[in-house]
Image 1 (cartoon, rainbow, N blue to C red):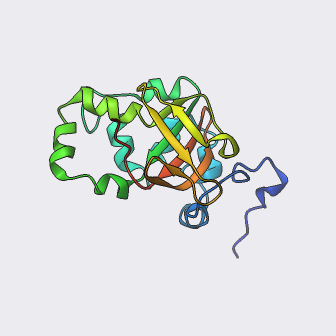
Image 2 (image 1 turned 135 degrees about the vertical axis):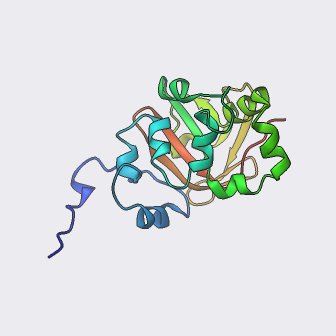
Image 3 (image 1 turned 120 degrees about the vertical axis):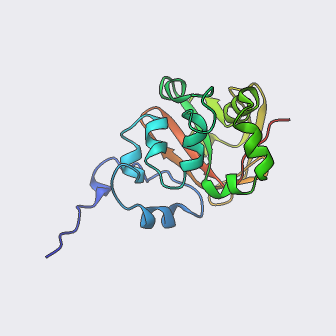
Length: 177
């Protein structure tokens, strides 16, 4: 016999404030475990991202695997942030020559990655507007509900809580001016 897990609605549900058209699909793809929405809530953001099957390229980029000189794990896990996290298909849109360049150009990779991070946790109901990034640039967040854009990227699923961050999965890599 198989037993159903108890409904999490009786507890504080980390999925209660999610926005974006891809949240339901993600919940079906990863219904439980460390990479699920509720599992990610227990870990700091870089750890939570490493358990998310949609974020393998991003995790490689922030953890020193793409470029050994760029490791932002302790920084990301060490304070409160809002993270715009490009999914693997977002990185697939970038041409191979640029990806190769990022493997050796640590300044450019750091600039791009920190452009996806905003100090402090911002919930979906407060995310719209211009947000100053750790890189010092600004991203423009527009829309609401299932139609939120960050610059030209669409939010697939946002408001995902981790122990120290609020994460918005996005469909394109944001490039600073």
